[in-house]
Length: 96
Image 1 (cartoon, rainbow, N blue to C red):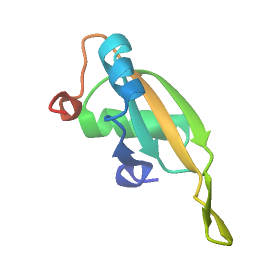
Image 2: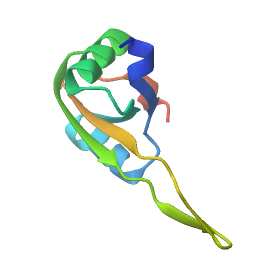
Image 3: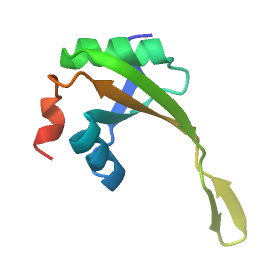
Image 4: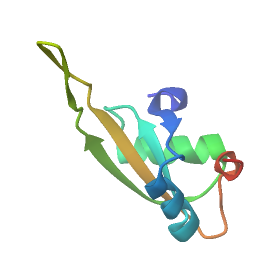
């Protein structure tokens, strides 16, 4: 899997993401559903040139929505929480 296909977008505007980033040096990303922890680790290290200590992943289930009589379900997506070494940071998030 290519690096550009693994990481879809950063999640940095949520309260939990900000607290993790400031307190524990952890960064949150939306990643591809079929991406493994090793894929996420190598992608973050190549894209941002940092050292990754740990990667935690979880699948966020899509919510059910109603549109009149019809019921729809949003798609599931995968979230990755990446912990960096204390000396590293990602500058992409610092301007937010």
